[in-house]
Image (tube, rainbow, N blue to C red; front, side, top):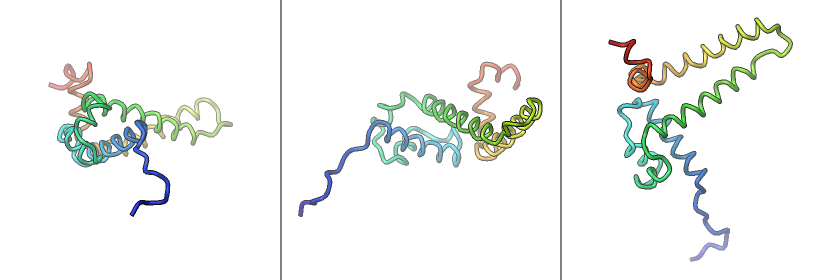
Length: 129
C-alpha cells in the first residue's frame, strides 16, 4: 500500500554532516581519537564509508571541525555567564575560571587527547621526549 502522507525526503548535506559529527563525537569520547576509524564513524552514522569520505577527506579534518565547533560552544557558554556590570578584571578572572571548568570536563572525556595533541601540535614533539 502506498502512503498518502508526504513523500520521504533524503537528508540534506547539512543534516548528514550533523549526523556524522555526532557519531564521531560519541566514538572519540568513548574510544579516543586514535582508536576510532573512519569505518567506525560511518557505521555509527549509518552511512556508507564512501559517503563519509564525500563529506570529510579524512579523520583529522572531521576532528578539527568538531574541535572548532566545540571551542565556539565553550566560549559562548563561558561568556554567557559573565556579569555585564562586573569590572573588567573580575570578568577576566571569571572568564578564565569558567574556561578552565569547561576544559576540565573535556579532559575527563577525551582519554587520549594528550597523545593526539603531542602528535599534531607544532609544539608537542619538542616538549615531550
